Image (cartoon, rainbow, N blue to C red):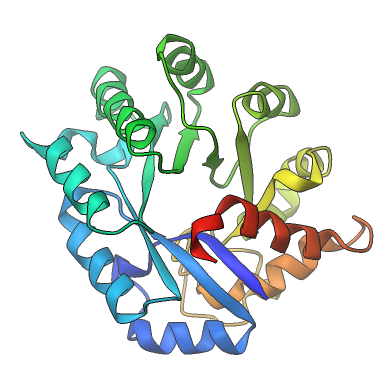
Length: 260
């Protein structure tokens, strides 16, 4: 059984009802998924999916760095409330992003720091987005008095040197099918150097489409189906020794321990 550690089923971009997506995921041997919010405006939609598909969809609430400037007064209290209402909820998708010009990094960082503090205070794991902002991320880590015991670097595309620094802080790393593209093979090589007990898998659906041959459920141009996870997992496991996919399943039980 596979577990999708990061997607956005609430996005509305799939062109079919979420119920159909879930059924197709189950047929592929996918046991569940974490659905990540990106801004307060979609927290309610994520909560609705977690209720409708209880035991399969697990919610993560947060504000993505791309939407840091949408945070309205009182958002921290509302985030605590929605997390407090569901002991299975985690914090995500949060982080910093140097690829975009706006919101500016100062705004991104302020919102990120507050969300890390909430995750630490409420003892929730968190899902972190970081793109072209590694030193900013490490700066936040160094300056904060506390950091969550474990956290997920989703769709990790950094170097092994970056990974080694993150490992010391408790990081797990999820691999997405986008990195099966030939021009991204360096990322696959980094994952092959990571400790086997710190690797998870994700689709980031509807984003991060894999190469066409791993699109078992084509939904049109640039739309990734979460049911593609199985094909992604099987390709990821090639050449990594017997038992790697079983180890990844065990990692999921360790990281998402409260979902069991």
